[in-house]
Image 1 (cartoon, rainbow, N blue to C red):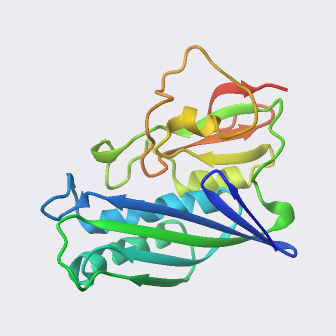
Image 2: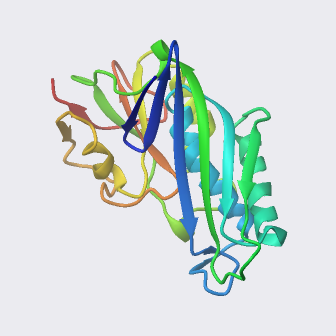
Amino acid sequence: MISKKVRDLTLIEMSEKVLVIAVDSCGGVGSKEMDELKVDPYYVGRFTARVVFMEILSTGAKIITITNGVMNEFSETGERILEGIIDELKEANIGEVIINGSSEENFETANTGVAITAVGVVDKERIKVNKDLAGLKVGLIGIPKVGDEIKLQNDHEIMSYKDIYSLLNNNEVVEIIPVGSKGIIGELKQINYEVILNIDLHVDINKSAGPATCALVFYRGDIIEGVTQIGDVMK
């Protein structure tokens, strides 16, 4: 069994399969007294789950289990977070999976906090990670958004699960990298290729993309619907 870390993912190779593990956390967002951004914990569950779902789905893996660590009482903060996770699974068209978790029942808390881990599995020859990117185009789907910039319901400017599934089914797409808090430039620094970006970009490449509101797409050939070319990978 071989284990390795690639960007924000842990990959565990087992015979012909690969386990793909992703984790994300969120703190200071919720309905508690000391939370900086006030939202229903339901959306904390949805958007934190969204990050790990996007990370795993973009590799071509199928999600098989989730852990949900809530740093607050289960009733009612943990309950609302769990409801959000379950609805996000439905949004992503992911079938029933086992959700295990824990909550803080010994101490009263003033901030909302949660950490979500998801595990996926994919055939070794089908995983879209660490591919040869030399000479490919670099595209962007969605735009970087964070915090209260994001519409809690139906934000059509951010990447959707429909987008991810469409890209995975496109033979011209070689690899998909969801963008996180490091921004577009941060994700590009983690690949072992020189990338030449267009000089007329209309997007902030340093801005956090919060809950994976956009992704880098490495592809061949012509324009892909919904994907804006932002540069090229050098050969």
